[in-house]
Length: 108
Image (tube, rainbow, N blue to C red; front, side):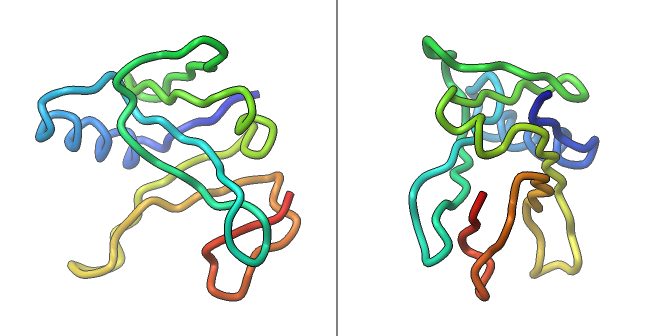
């Protein structure tokens, strides 16, 4: 399986990297956090480390460390803009069994 981006998310990442002036893609991982167990961590990918898995969607690389991949394998990341003040990445993760009420963390 893989971690993929929608076309909208890919375009957003490419725009963010262009404004930043550096980066090879999007790094996605998980960390232990919150009341449900895990939280997503999204950052620029500046390098590919040993053990990383690299996926590509619409010309944008998605870099995932091996430990996090077990929690997010098969996930699709979308970028949604509901209004001028409400926009961001949306994580469609088929591995999620439950999430906290505030939506900050999830259980696999």
